[in-house]
Amino acid sequence: MTSSLCYLSASDALRRFRNGSLDPVELMQALLARAEALKGPVNATTRIYAEQALTQARAAAERYRQGTARPLEGLPVAVKEETDVAGWPNTVGSLAIDDYVPEHNHPIVDKLVEAGAILHLQTTNPEFCTLGQTWSRRWGVTRNPWNLRYTCGGSSGGSAAAVAAGLSPLATGSDMAGSTRIPAAFQGLYGYKPPFGRLPTGGGEELFAFAAEGPLARTIDDLILMQNIISGPHPASYATLPKQVLPASYPDLAGWRIAWHPTLGAEAVCPQVRANLQRALDGLRRRGAVVEQVDISWDMHRVATVLLEGIFGIFFTEYLQSLPDAAYPSLTSYVQKLWRDYRDRPASVAGAAELASELHQDMQRKVWSQGYRAFLCPTTYTTELLADLDPVASPTFPVDGKPVDSYLGWAATPPFNLLNRYPVISAPTGLAANGMPTGMQIVAQPYDDEAAFQVAWNHAQADEDGLFRHRFPQLDTLLA
Image 1 (spheres, rainbow, N blue to C red):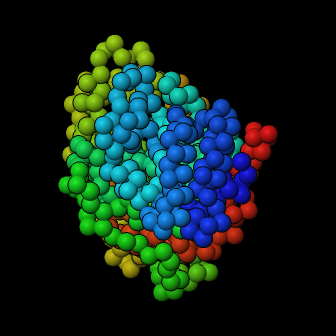
Image 2 (image 1 turned 180 degrees about the vertical axis):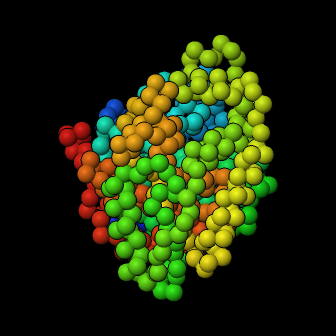
């Protein structure tokens, strides 16, 4: 159960599988042992599929011996509970659901399995994926491996925690208000919200453009690796773009102009989030970019409110209405509040469409038409959100001494779910004094995925902080 194996990157693991210096079974055994040991303190997993995973790892080892290995042959990948895997029970974190067992994989799961990946863990999410933290009455509290006192983020918190804690080199996420980027920022990972249509959707998701599945990884190389596997058409989806293959490496940023803003209009930002962002900007300047502040400052409370109205207008109001009244007492406090706020009122997406256009025009005037190739801002504004904070019981939360909305007032992610054709990567920028990671969003023009990845790749080359290279979550006492 050595950290050297558990924190092996996906790219390095595959390289070692191919040259015979590591057996897929050996890696799987190490990850499964660590997953069992951290099941209590971190609580990132709903189910561990050990027997199935080891059987598949032995088959993968044989494929390497026979020379028939596929691109991800034998590589462990954790899957968020919300993402369907055929035969795996899926409660979406709710006590109100007991009997849903998908018959078919989500399209990105199909792509992972067809590439040879082994799905060994199902990971936690908040109830119905409706919180930026990860706790529920079904699964309890998922904690951040860097500091167990604080949140792992949400709603893909279990997936991110599994990657950060060394339970898996890769994991799936999904993002409708920041649910991949928030956990990535809080746990020092790379997380990608692709533009709508870049990845195949699940059945019935084709009109839900605010949301997108996406990869989570400890390194930019691994993020590229996974994104290249899961992108492109699938027979079950009619809303997918032709496959785009991202380069594995990129030139420097000479000749690039990059815009940024320190708050995006937020009421408050933690000083260490600001300081680490500034350091990241300096790294991009060393890579050749001209980085300049622009006046992109939005009413973030309005943005979050309108996004939620759009989400409920498209599908979630009807989803709540499908639950029987008797389910209400079993729901978590935050879903009960959403029930009270939205279940019996008409919802509309018109306001979301109007605001998205307004935000895009502001970006067009101040960023894209001015020759900037990318835009940078924080992913989250704080590093001190408690793992079990209940936004209903505590509707405000202090950021830099100022009260903000506990539900989403500490996140800079919602605008880019309204701007759902924008590719956005959350990249780690360092650690705060409490041991919690910080992150920044790298935003590119609609469907210009390569621009976002070129900035992220250069950021990784400039990085001096060493997260997941020589700085790791301190979990040794929990593993003793």
